[in-house]
Amino acid sequence: MIIKNDITAIKICGLTSVENALGVVRLGVDAIGLVFYSESPRNVDLKVAQQIVTHLPPFVSSVGLFVNPTQDQVLQTLELVDLTLLQFHGDEKPDFCSGFRKPYIKAVRVTDDVDLIEYSSMYAGAGASGLLLDAYSQGARGGTGETFDWGLIPSELEIPIVLAGGLTPNNVAKAIDCVRPWAVDVSSGVEGVLKGLKKLVLVRDFINEVKNADARRLTKL
Image (cartoon, rainbow, N blue to C red; front, side):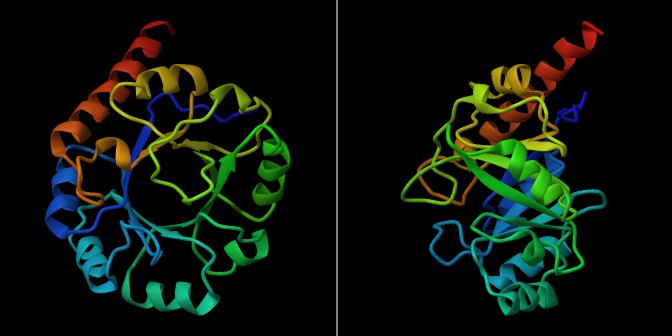
């Protein structure tokens, strides 16, 4: 069964500057995501990523996003950036993901022909901390602002779900009510025109909507 969370964790992904990252953190998120993928408009320089992580306060996780990296690319990043968690967003196999002595999550781009139960079992068996469920897009590996059919998520998954894909302040509460994920992950949904620059007013609204959804559910317990 899906592992539920009464208080939904929040990750803001695709940060590219120390100032913006700290502004997001001050609003009360649980984790920030740093993209180490050269084809992404949110790709962050290693030295900037190092500075961001160095300035994080206690109990805020730093997540490094990779897309089909080599082993050396991940190791070189870890030498400079003290990441809490790895996020693999490509076609990485379980034995690759588990080879860095770091907790990790595996992203799955959801379509109606993807067997999420099989994915869950395969990566849970290789020590994954969770599955990140994202929308499928032919031209991008995430951050597209597109949603997917949440009804495709089965109830028999073995590991926690991080829900991503087109979340915004306008739909995240509905998503939480429908899916009950362990965490939600947003990138483009809290940006303006500039990709990689989060609008703090949107981040605040997003966090408030998550809290409102949790509070409504808790009052029914």
